[in-house]
Image (tube, rainbow, N blue to C red; front, side, top):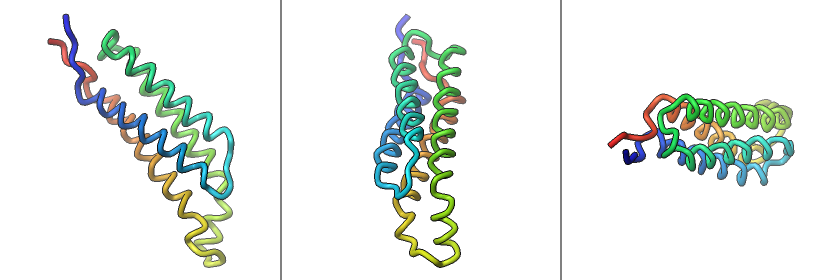
Length: 131
């Protein structure tokens, strides 16, 4: 039986690319937490392993576990990355600092949240079509 990749597979690949982009964008954030990189890159590793095994396990529970693991790692990375920037966000909101001080953080946060959303979407749609 030959399997063809479906929408869930593509969404999961996009989530991995967005997680890599978020990790690259996080390098230029003012205050960083090293564990954020670990979480994002671990999520990318989970996504790579899941995509390599997608043809073998396809729409099984194992693939769902991979999507959950990637989602948790990305969410934890967002949480850690945001924790270090809380003061800077407050300074910008109160007008003490200009918005440009958190611009790179906003780019990181948008990319990471998009990666998280794409992992959620990948969890709910089929990964492979059985031919």
